[in-house]
Image (cartoon, rainbow, N blue to C red; front, top):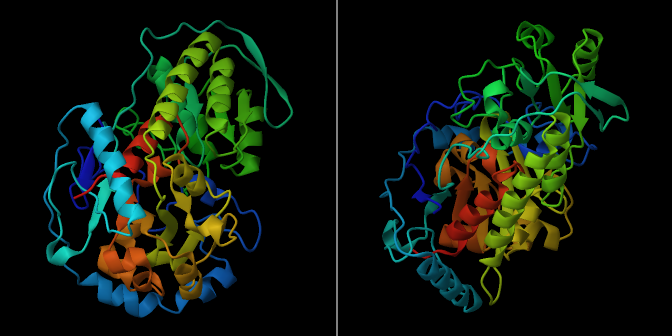
Length: 422
């Protein structure tokens, strides 16, 4: 079962997860935020240098951050979910009627009471039913050598998978390798790979999400699996020149790409049959999670990417990745509905027009603006239905837009957070 925690209840392993910045630290982009597609889209989010974004977001940054710094954290109780799957789905379905009637639902334990005082809806963290990876059992035995087509157009032969390095902006490639049952062969990790089984591995992205050639070569990997979300390209080329096979995976981040990425990683590691087993499991979890979406009038959800310390305030739209997760739980992506694509600067007018019933944010982003009270001070947020009712859902940065082997579990957690009443 998936855990739905009141915000502030920290799961085991989260507090000191390496690779995640402190709330006041630099931006830690996840998902499609890593694409510097064009001037209007979100730039590589750790590099908050886009002058247009900074001008739009910076107007409210200084006073808000100063006010947010002294706020006391809201105190809530940690609810533990009970009951059968049948009761849970019945509860979720019943809540859809509240949305259809214009009522305010809150996020807490099924059958529990409101975790916030004064009738506001408060905020709850949508969390997975477990923080770690579940590998295939039995683990596969690689059949090598293999020759595969890399996403960069080259053909790569892999002869040894005893020392694997799987890295990208999202943490999804390492997640797939561990889920295939080959986690014991992984020798390093990227900033976004923070699940417990990998958290103690050496970090090879010393500059946020840029690979360090020296850090990689020191680990002596026998194969590197990456995608275009990570670089620099010169480092990847240096690895190739040193004789390390580098297999590139396409970096499309959506639900449809998940099986394709699993198959590509499995093929490169000589375990295609295990790849099919994992695809069956993950697709089954995705389909089951999507099936829990209730009927009735769907809620409007806006995903906000915020990094208060970096002055980054963006709203997601079509193709941002957040839209796929929102639509997977049967909700309406508010950014897409008002014609936004990818990530755009957040404005009060845009938010008010989007009129979200629920605001979805990443946990570190929420912390960076001083929690729910700080979020409500951003232009336009308090004037939305979500702001009025304090309907905020947060989810860990490395899970919400990961699109890896835990995607089905992430959808289930998000659905429960949105539809389960206080």
